[in-house]
Length: 81
Image (cartoon, rainbow, N blue to C red; front, side, top):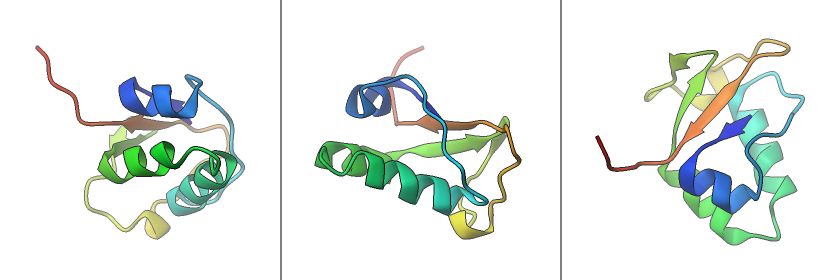
């Protein structure tokens, strides 16, 4: 899982591995790993996600399958050009 901007700041790292079959499982694992920092969970609520480069959009995170060795990009809202 790769974190960007506010998600990176809240996680305290740019990326970390998770063993998960779905995006929902990966996010649950990430929330558990960062349970001591409630800001992390708040940031995740505002994020969008890319799975292996494909936008998740409004799909249910339980239906988004993850490939072994794949990448989840965690993208908080940001401004800029």
